[in-house]
Length: 510
Image (cartoon, rainbow, N blue to C red; front, side, top):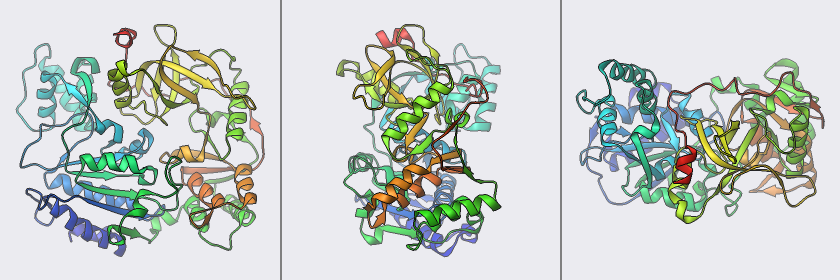
């Protein structure tokens, strides 16, 4: 046990010790920073589970730090060194861009599962540059890049540890150094998977094909995958492979939002008692608001969380009407949710390209404006390291009571989007926003229906997931009303990134 135990609770320390043994079997001895060949060919899947505030992220971050200090190569998705016999590798993954960005904001170099399943094919000159930035070779001489440009790249990498950002600082674009994408064939050693409550069995099987050692981090109080079989993948592991964190840490427990989340575990708390608790929390802490209406201004970047699709559709139309959006066009700044990519098999490379850049099912996107050709749009992928993408788009906006949606924006094929001003609580799992609006009348309806899921009332699971999406402020909306926006929609709030992986009209047609 290292001196990190000083920051750990007893359950975290026990989990650390058990995971240390698993990692040693994978060829990483944390007690003496020694890397060896794996001790056996057998695979291992462990799970660290606990409710919000139990310290899962702290444990993940400390393990990542210890593995890096031991010399393990961190595979971040933007560059991967050639595999060496005496080196071990680690990837920290999440199911969505937003979930990965939550970890990156806490200093953990996370990327998406898709970004590891689909790996870039690099230009050889780029590989030299990336290896130099990662401290694996001497400073290279690259034709067309001056010493000043290399210095800018190096300075950028010291700040943000992003190879694409560093190369952009040197004046390079994604198309200069990534020549294509392919499905990963070479395995890695160790995978840490955050938000693993969102995984279905197929996703876990795909990960086990790549990682002989997997550690899943998840919250058993969240909702199981919609397409799953009713449970979470870590619940099927043997008991000895499930490490439970039960203590809620003081620095987290000071949050009124987490206090409310954990109050849901009390079987004596029904919906109406819980709503009174929200009202009482709002009276003593500004981080909880008992709101009389939905705020349209907030919906542009953090969707209203609802249970029912009918509620979602009504709120989306109210949002668009409040901003004066025409029925046959999108306004720059409108939020979208990727619903998949519709491309025939002959365009498989385009699909891999878009998915590897973060445009996967469930990705939250902001429409920035029309592209260079009809049907193309400029998009901003929320939570992606390189968020600007241009792609052929099909936008569907559902109408209440009608089976077919209307389509204000369409290419013949490409990425498919639904409107994102409101989303179901199921789709919100894995995401966090500074301020979250929860539409309480929907949760009340779930409570009245009396449905039970995995031994717990469904409304409590819905409420738990919804309120723990809030990082700073929870707005519990109690009335079916929408406040008018205070300013027009726009994209000025989106930060301009360093690298730009734009898919041009010509690339779409090739």
